[in-house]
Length: 289
Ligand SMILES: C[S@@+](CC[C@H](N)C(=O)[O-])C[C@H]1O[C@@H](n2cnc3c(N)ncnc32)[C@H](O)[C@@H]1O
Image 1 (cartoon, rainbow, N blue to C red):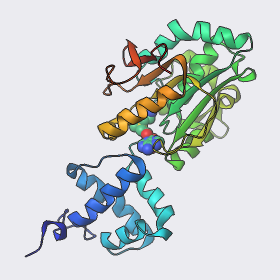
Image 2: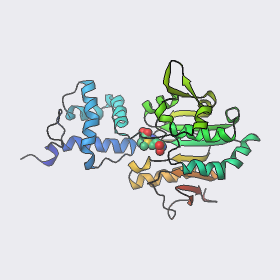
Image 3: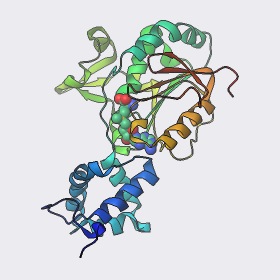
Image 4: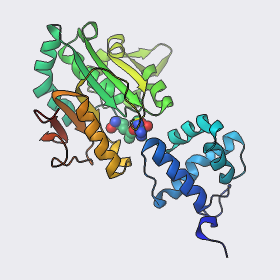
């Protein structure tokens, strides 16, 4: 009799996919990227990775597992992780964060930049750049000369294809519909020869630096951040990884720095050095570092 490991996890699939294959893939995605794949995600895993099997001409998931767990499989491992990430994002998603910054934080922070101060914001898990550019637009609205000052936004992600798109800075007309019309006119320009595509302005583009960074690995940056956005990334991680990452953010924030998280994420104030000061907005507790 077949054990559960040898049983097919997806019946009638084009490629044989056993529970053992599923477990190997789930373990690898968890150890490499922190993402938890519950058994209920088995069909999603199958359909996203079946495309990879087709693309590289493998016959079943056993062969795929052998490839991604081998020393030669680094490139495919990266493509597998990218296939497993959820990249949904929008301009000015969860608008209360941008409103809070505009009303309570940016006036004095950007006033400091005008006098020669340094301002750093991190969009951690930036996907295709909409979050980082929304921060950039919010800054430029109050400080149009920001690109010529010491003001920068780091936009990082594990998914290099998303970073390529962000860095390119071109969006379909429907993707920029969430940007208020007035701001759209100021900070986007139509791409010549394609009326349905818009490109971020030179000023906006120059505020943002896109970098590949796996939140589970070392963080190479030297300076601290005034504000970190890490929204709708931790929901895919287990509790332990979430708690470790919230803690690591506190170590790279300036004293009193802010951390904005996604609508369904929470930080336990009892175990973390933050105070909740607004809707999913946390401030690094004074004296915490
Ligand atoms: C749902 S998107 C969130 C985008 C944006 N922050 C927002 O809220 O609209 C989640 C992003 O987290 C990235 N991600 C997942 N695991 C990651 C990891 N270990 N390190 C860095 N980025 C990761 C994914 O590639 C994806 O682009």
